[in-house]
Amino acid sequence: MRNPKLFLLLLVPAVLYLSGCTKSSATGTTATYITATNLFPLNVGNAWTYSEYDLNSSGLPTGQPRKVVSQVVGTTTMDGYTGVYLVSDSIFYSADSITVDTTYFRVVSKNHLQLKIAISAAGFSFPAMWGDFVNGDIPLNTNFKIKDTTVTFLGSPVQLSVNGIVQGPDSVQLQNGTTYPSAYKLTTNITLGTAGKVVFTTYFVDGVGPVKLVEQIYINSGLFGGYDRELRSTNF
Image 1: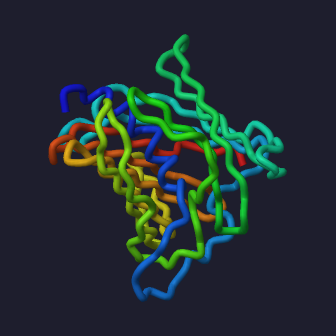
Image 2 (image 1 turned 180 degrees about the vertical axis):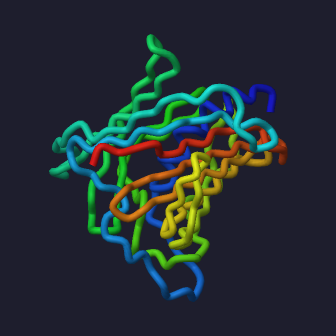
Image 3 (image 1 turned 180 degrees about the horizontal axis):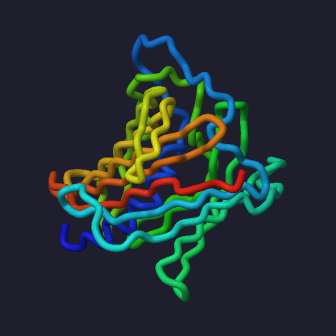
């Protein structure tokens, strides 16, 4: 890959989007399911404050942490759906350098969430559409295919494969020493031809929401880097 930063730009938003861009078809015989009833507390005003670290090619934190604040800022009607939640994700690089993105979520049922987000990067784009983010109808500990298609990347056709698995509940420990004994882990593997892969892992705790998010980017089979976002506090 000639331009690792371009690959990063493409796949960071793609991870969240493609983990829900099609209805998943699960395979396997595991018959246990998510029993949590509030994996992502989407109440207007709820906010999560995270510390986000860059990861180096050894998978270790590097540099100074960034402050990230995710907040449910309101609801709207969109595409015929009422009660769509707007989640603002603000990343503070410094006191005068803040990046803000908004993601749209809807609650299908107590353990089934959908999101809407678009991908647009050099030579590669999908229209914004709704798809599953967390789906409690898929058995736990079961590998499932999310998407397998051919896309155009930098002017050439490339095979895009996305697979996922939800595991848990199990214990997860943060770098600050906080331990959550019953977290569900959603792992999404995105492979873009032979050039690279992204592994994106989110840990959810019932009644709390996402407590840890890890992205690892692989280029030509080697770990390039990524980030580790860990919960510091909530306001609820």
